[in-house]
Image 1 (spheres, rainbow, N blue to C red):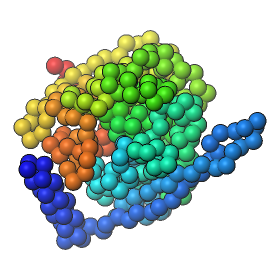
Image 2 (tube, rainbow, N blue to C red; image 1 turned 180 degrees about the vertical axis):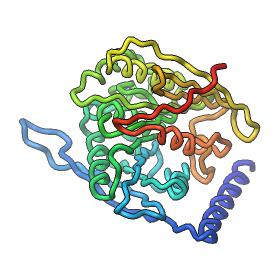
Image 3 (cartoon, one colour; image 1 turned 180 degrees about the horizontal axis):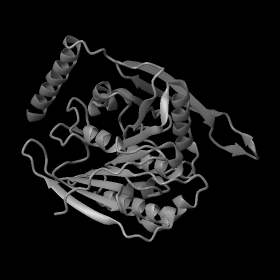
Image 4 (cartoon, rainbow, N blue to C red; image 1 turned 60 degrees about the vertical axis):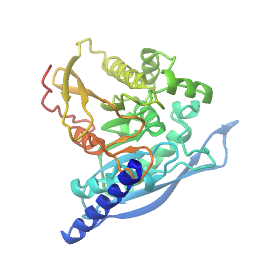
Length: 344
């Protein structure tokens, strides 16, 4: 009964927001559909037939091609697609408000029955396969839609979060910052059975060793990360968030050879309007490297999402806004450091 009421309230709230936008005179954005194809593998140096993935691109209401726009890449989770993911996260509404483009790559059902990104595929972990397709889409959109290449960001949920870890580790030169929501670290698993075990119990792989593998890649560049996870996630154990944190901090240390110790700042929020959460920030000097948010009571769902759709919890905090606010502190090659959190 409560779930039915919650979905009805969410639909009413969504309708009210759309009505307010129209009455306020703010122009609505538009969807653009496209696809990108690349050779998936080679056979004796000959490329096999092209493999393709589609994407949806959201252009905010005040979009004009002459302007240099930020771009946010959003990778959906299992049993989702670009439309349900955009509606669940309400990221397009935020894009209209803040002024950025949103790219939603789409996993095909024939590639994965549940539309999961195949983050456990070793080809993707070597900057090939689906990771190469996503990177190709990003470059295509940057060139075609007036995107500022210094302000390109990527975020994902669950399997999309795990693929975000891969994209940041293998294509760090593309992204100014990333966000992993309820996901896993780079190279957490290399097969379906390993992936299932990692989701339940955490990866058996070493965050330090996998960080070394990432940094050894020719095109590696460190990407600041925001990690969000629910304390009651029974699909992807919260220990995976700890492993993401450990791995990215190792990558930060290994990538620049700086032995300066990082500093941790902790704060907490217990506002009755949303789940309480603890936020930890990791810095080197005045540079923000990582922000970790553990939401108490949140299961495997987008925090603050639209309850009309599965894998969304409306209680919050608002992950979409938190992620975008984190991203705006970074530009590729010109990272800004916001004021440090107050140590508790």
